[in-house]
Length: 267
Image 1: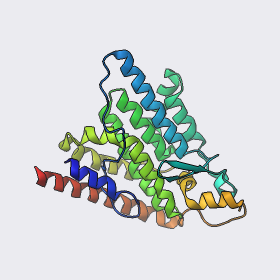
Image 2 (image 1 turned 60 degrees about the horizontal axis):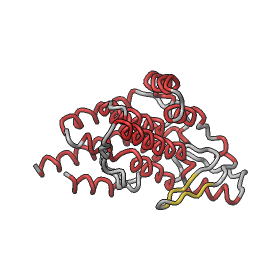
Image 3 (image 1 turned 135 degrees about the horizontal axis):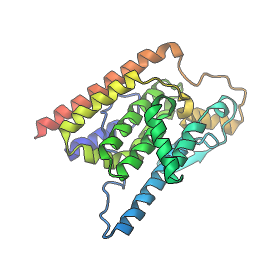
């Protein structure tokens, strides 16, 4: 199972190629340590949440879009259409999940559950980490895969193919503990992924899908060149979105089932 999961991670370096739903990303956060006392455990949880939510904030930082290359981030102030990308709700929600008081975090979680259509995928990734570290692993897993399938769709409808690097970055930052947990119970995982796909099919998209453009080379070059008058479209024509969304769901589920078939054969 470990070798198969590793191959799944390597296949998802570009969202333009079909990849399995549940890759096991490369990251040093491969396993949760086991602190000797409750104090150390709480400190470790807060550190993990802060680190993960900081990464999600970077994914939404309209004031400093980043292009991910290894471990380096190049940040350039957005100009023109990129400066109009609305990530305010997502950034505020991620901040509430990570740094806000308990009541603010509870309100944020409740609103995400009530109105998921309003939130960009990085919010779901951030929520997955918070829930997982609170001991709600199954709930956290749902939101991780919900964020993953939606992030892939946003990459598909983005006119800049290089922006898909954001999906791999989010998967690597948030995916390892959740994937390790879910791959220990394949029947549970096989029941969850179709439910996530159906949730995606029935949940509208009422957020600014262009958040992902802030990770692309076009955003960086436009900012570096100060090309505020560049009118190139940031997304593919909206008339294509429904078809792209369904293709995304079909390929997501197909890739997942292929991986499950391979894992069952190895047993």
